[in-house]
Amino acid sequence: MELSNLTNTPGARERRKRVGRGCGSGMGKTSCKGQKGQQSRKGHKHKLVFEGGQMPLVRRLPKRGFNNAAFNAKALGVNLSSLEAKFENGAEITVSALAKAGFSDNKRPKIKILGVGEVTKKFTIKGIPCSATAKQKIEAAGGSVA
Image (tube, rainbow, N blue to C red):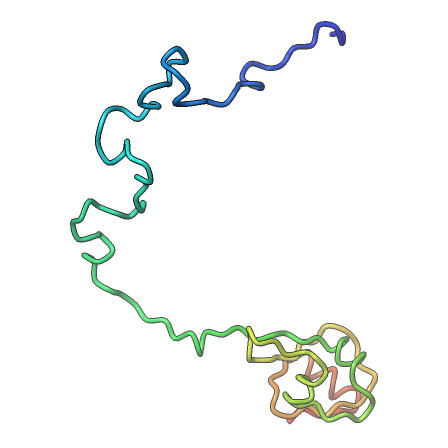
């Protein structure tokens, strides 16, 4: 193989199809759209789910199931290492304290404290669920979970 005899792979440099540019091109006059009808007109694209006016399948089938989004919400996990960095020794950690520290987001209203990281400060956790390892580490450092 040498630079002088390199060629493109077949189909790598095909030109785009220019329709409606004269009968000599083979794609003139009707621009590959056939004769008359909805598909030959401009703006003919209809919705993929459109079934020609008959009652759509989605509306023919009954509704099923139940989705209770309020109770399905996933909790925002807050690690012990980030609490250690943001709060001082003896701090009382509540939902409002976490919101002031910038931990809450509007997408997930629930918060749960997870046991990732080490704790050296005493924290008092009130009204926030904790994982078992987080509770164990907080109590080992002299804090409490209420």
